[in-house]
Image 1: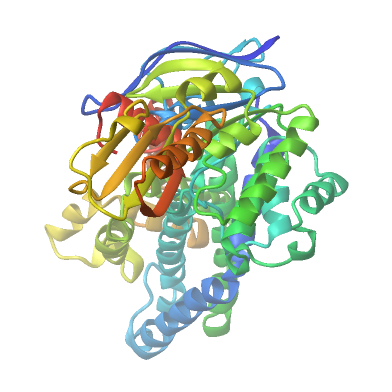
Image 2: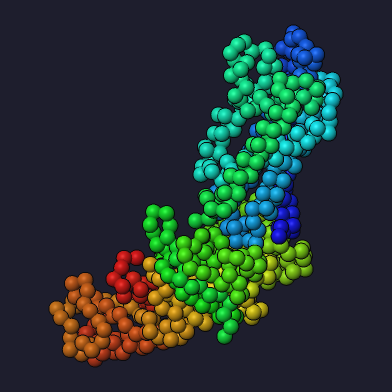
Length: 254
Length: 310
């Protein structure tokens, strides 16, 4: 049976950790997103044609949101579990009567919450630069939550896998960010010359950016059902890996 | 007395082949203070880790409160507390929040009055709003104890609770442990200090190379294993041991300029014998310029007895 008090304690503590660095955690993504809007939205975007009937400044919003969402969610979650391992405080979690359910809901739920707060802030920030409307707001919220959940789980795995700070940063820095940039954040896959438009489909982030873009504007590079299916598959794969980690105690228990 | 913890054939082999626990059988009685002693790397922390869920046993069973910990680990762990050897806690958190978190983590409803009581008993109440990083080492250790007590455990593990703390604070810790015992908490502590075991433990267990090699009532074990070591610096070097002191457990060392006494037991016999030895030297006209005595720790004794390096 799930221990809700334990879950709530983990969740609350993780959010408090976020609050301790709230200024940095919020300001950095807002500043970065603003810069993207100034450079790509205003400076370059003013010379770009509409894409799929969407103004270029508005077109990049889902991509920028995904860029921040993936990076922040992964790092929040990975740090959340890595730091107790690094400092040794994980002994308390491991000796408590909590299992994989409480741990995941606590850590991943907090990482998701932080990401959703950031997503809301970015959308508000975007409004300062670009006029946009969301075609399917409910689906957008569901999709953002799904992606946040999947990448919180991914970050959790990363935080358990990493045995030093370099490893902790290497996946987001060397894989996630480049793949997001190449995943159609600033352009439509249709704009790529052949065969790059086909090769680009091997990048899983394409489906995420495309999925979110569809919820915003009703058009995207990839069918929304494919995007949902890929996101759910990734989420399920992460859950399976974490279940294995807890079952075997890999990198958690000696 | 009713057992609160039973280890049967507990074994832990780490990847790489190191056997940290080797078929350990041990029963802890309800309400006692049990001191687990042994040299570094003997398996003390692994044993604690196996019971507390930090280490996955390779074999054997652990029953706590009559519950098999492989099956009913949630129920059992909810009643076990752990104070680790390392000062591992979130240094940025205020004391009261860290302790309250521990209570919630173990599934208990918030109870500010109980948290206050714990913090007051550990002289931490005045520091409740301070970040842990701002506290002294001794206070940090008390915070760890407070965190372990926050969920009101029936069985408490203290892994080297006084390692690296000064004498005054060590005695303060002993008083705290005594209070916990008075409240009915069963305590298992590991320590390197013989006086700590002497002061507090009801029973003592000795672990070496992952095997429990002795378990006994404290008094019986101390009498059996305690030793005194004395070094007497002689005014003039001796070529051989004089007849007058040949009956004492002494040896010449440092080219005959010093006498080494090693004997006695844990009942104070050693100190008395050293006093007799000095009288015998005086009677024999052997002058000396200094005496240095030391009560050996159990670890010293085991290393010595087993001929191992520390």
